[in-house]
Image (cartoon, rainbow, N blue to C red):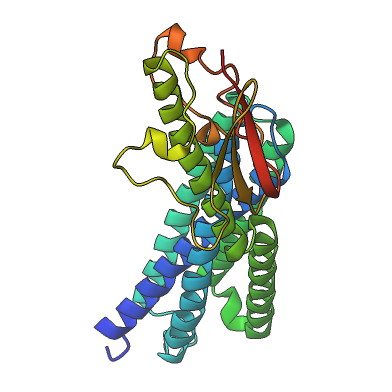
Length: 303
């Protein structure tokens, strides 16, 4: 009865919980990387950025829960989960079978979801890679615990260690590969600052449109003219200030960017200040916010 303690139960249950969290988010990471590396023409930029965000979540969860699983498993093994006859305790065997049930349910559920996305138009290459990665990740864990329930690893402890080391190497390789395809934290930060600048310029453009509509088509001379007592947006951190210049055809809005924009980024597009066609056509090209690196001026033609 000494082995059937609350401590042993918590350790064993915690080990299995951290295992399935690790497997779930490792699969999520792989699916996201497949979406990034095999772009689909039907995907929007939002979906691409969502895949990157999901990959970051997968990396973070695997980094936390996979080592947790290894540590708890080590503690479980030290707590003598086998009886003197060399077979598993009843509690351990029940938890192993429970893990097999959960693993099978996860595998079948994910396969259903994969088939649904394929039927909804996902490209064949993605489906093949996702299905393969799912079968390898979940299938390997399922096979390991199925053999464990049969006592295979008790008789072949060395093979169990080799299997564990191989799993660790594979997980580390996937995480490193993920880091290589989601951009560094500094790059992500710079891209967010670029987006803040686009939003600021978009707001300035709205106010310029309002000024044109309420002043018989006259353009404001400076940005300050359209803000009255409200503070004019300023560039984040130490970036150069925004600039506004009246031209023969309309005006230019300029800012300095650290990264290139992505085509058709709906979050970088300006929105008209009113649903009326008249205001929509005050500026003939208000929705083009594509930019490169460095100082970029957005030329706006005013009717």
